[in-house]
Length: 77
Length: 284
Image: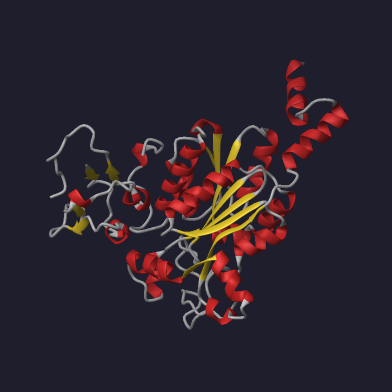
């Protein structure tokens, strides 16, 4: 489960560059802050390496290990 | 995230600034070493990177420009049990505080200095710093700088530090490993992180976005062992414009605050001369 906090993200796109599985993609429209948020479009490919979490300069990304089984809650689109 | 002061977020750094990445790597290194934030005191000077301790839930000291390491020396000698971490930038550590840096390394005092080297003065508007690479353009060098930059890691190794490593922000895992070793090392530990400044360095040097800057780090980073091999083979020309990353030294030697404690034990019979003087005054 990948969560991107829309209040913290500044749209630097480093997560898109750094992800080895190319999970992220830019969203098509601006949010209210004027930022194209990264969307985890291919979340199934995620291997939980937590590299995006580590590289995010604004601490906006949290990657949770799928133990709870909560899916379908996408706040980014 | 749990270590940050949530009321201060989002942080003041520009989009894509490397400071946040380094903070994440620091937390990761600290967690894997098993150190609690309560045992850590953060000291910083002036600059973009020196704003980092303001976002962390720990004791912190924001000091005058360039003097972070001298304040940290006092803190460490006053309370040797404390884990003192200095966050400093290249302008803070190399230019105005250069003298403090080399002398702290010479004394081998048990500090962890994390130098965030963005190769430019970011906070004041993009002036050329002592670590700007030759030929780079800044506000004070519109035709490109002609001076040779400081090689900070080599400088600190020569001054006598016991642990020195250099990484870039695109290698956060190696960086957190190095920070772990630096926190563990009894002696002066220096971790230099080559970081991106897309706003001032990138905009003037045709690396406009953070992604471009990070890609250039990826292309130009070369490991220390490989670089040593190239030098041994006489191919030094291939190293021009490259960033040599890796561990530069990891060698233990006598530490400053231990020496002070031993001296006060010899002369006064008590371990902490400063503390005992303070306590005896309180009794009156």
